[in-house]
Image (cartoon, rainbow over all chains, first blue to last red; front, side, top):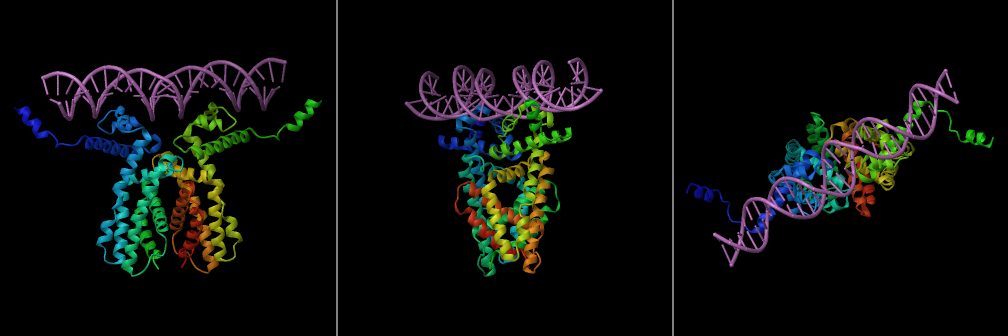
Length: 210
Length: 210
DNA sequence: GACTTTCTTTGACAATTGTCCAAATTTCCA
DNA sequence: TGGAAATTTGGACAATTGTCAAAGAAAGTC
C-alpha cells in the first residue's frame, strides 16, 4: 500500500516515447555543453560528458551518431539560451542613453554569470575554422547573434531619432571584438575588464548611428 | 682530394653549439606552427609535428620539456612574423585616405596569404581561456598586436591632423572583431568577405579620431 | 685514433580515446 | 501477466596519445 501510493505519487506525467527520446538528447546535450565549457573542445571526452550526466558512456551512441553529432546538437541548444538575452533591455529602455547603459550592464552581467559558456562559444567558433562539420551550426548561431545585436542597434537608433550607420554584420563584429577582449581579460583576473567593457560599449553605440 | 674539396665546399660555416641548439628549437617551433595551423590545437600531435620536420618524434623531448613547452615556444615565434607587418604601410602613406586604403589592403592580403596561421592564433587565444599555461604567451602577443594596431591609428590621426578618439585596447578590439569575422567568412568560402573587410576598415578608421 | 659528449632514433609504456556490442534491465502493450 | 521492444550498462576493441629510456650515430676533444 505504502509502496503503491509512493509509486503513484512519484510517477511522472505520461509522455510520448518521442518526447522521452528528445528529453534524453537534451539532457546529454546539456551535459556536453557543461563539460565542454569547463574543459574546452580539445579535452572534453565522451566519458567525461557522460559522467556529467546521469548515464553511462555507452548511451551516447544510442542517441547520437558520434561525438561530433552530440557536440553539434549541444551547440544548437546553446543558441536558445542567448537569442533573447537583450530583448528585455530593448523593450524597457526609453532613451538612447538608458538603452546603452542597460545593454552595457547586461553584457557585463553575462560575462560574470556565464564566462565558461562564452569561452566555449569562442572555442567552437575557432574550431569551425578547422572542422567543416561544425561550420553550419556555428554560422547559424553567428547569424543569430548578429540579429540579436542588430535589434539593439536599431532600437538605439530609433530612440535617438537617427539611422544606423553601419551594416548589421559590422555592428556585430565591432561589439563582438569588445566582448571577446573583455572576456579574456576577465578570465585572466583583470579587475578593470568589465568596467572598461561597459565604458567602451557606451562609447561605441553613438558611433553606430548617423 | 676530391673528397676533401667537396667536404670543404659543403661544410656549413662554423657555429657555436648554442646556435645549433637554438636552430633546432626554431626548426621544431616552425614545424609545430605549420602543423598546428593545419590541424588546430585539438588534433596536432607530437608525432605529426615531428613528421613535418626533419626529425623523429623522440627528439622533441630533447629540446623541449613537454608538448606545451614546444607550443608556447612556437607561439612566441609566431609573434615575430606579425609585429612589423604594417610598418611599411605606416611609413609610406602621406594622407589619411591613402593610409586607410593601404592598411585595409594589407589586412586583406594577409588573410589571403596566411589564413591558416591566423586561424591558429584565434584557436590558441581561445585555448588560453581554458589552459593557464598558455596565458602569458597569448597575452604578450595580444599586447604586441594592440601596439601594432595603435601605431596605425596614431599615424592615421597624425595625417588627419586629429587625435585618436579611443583607447589603444579599444581600437585593437574593434579592428580585431572585423578581422576575425572576415577570416571566418573567407574560410567558409564567402567571396565578398575580403571586399567587405576592406570597406569596413576604411569606414571605421575615421570614427577612431576626433 | 680513442674517448667523451652531444645528439638522434627507435621502440616500449601506460593512459586515454571513440566506437561498438552483447547482455542485462526497464518499459510498454496485448 | 508475459513477451516484445526500447533502453541502459559495462566491458572489449583498436588506435592514438605524451612520455621516457636504452641504444646507436655523430661530433668534438685530447
